[in-house]
Structures are given as structure tokens and as C-alpha cells.
Image 1 (cartoon, rainbow, N blue to C red):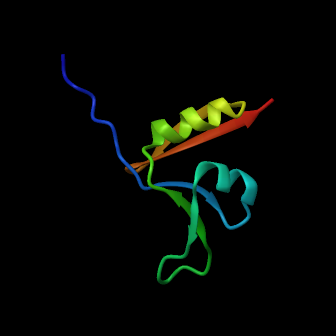
Image 2: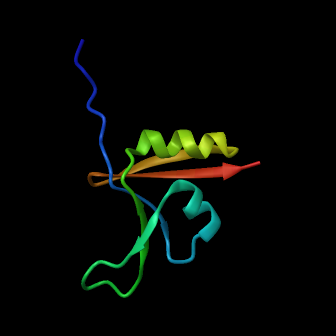
Length: 78
């Protein structure tokens, strides 16, 4: 079988309007990229680690899509 590569961070986990408490739980830091007029939250964890943390907080994956080389996950909390 062929080994499946697993991406490492950083992982973008939110935008400037995301819940600051949730971002704190994830260990995210807010930063702005040169040329952008908005901020984003990032963690140094791989996406699978972030998804595990969110699952432990009651979030479930609703859908996933690929945009170029970027994966976008939509989650919902009951």
C-alpha cells in the first residue's frame, strides 16, 4: 500500500470574527498577512489534530471540499 501523507501546520482555524474563547482553547494566534486588510487565526497543529480537538468540544464535520491545494472543513456543534 502507499502511505498517505499527513500535512503539518500551520492550520488556519478562523477569521477576525471568530469566537475568541474557542480560538484560545485551540491555542490559535491572530495574525495579518502583508497586503491583507483582515486577520486570521492560525495554530501550528496539523488539521487532523485540530479536528480531534473540535470533536472533543462537540463539533462534527458536516462537509469538506478542496479549493486548489487548500481543504475547507465545515463543522457544526449540536
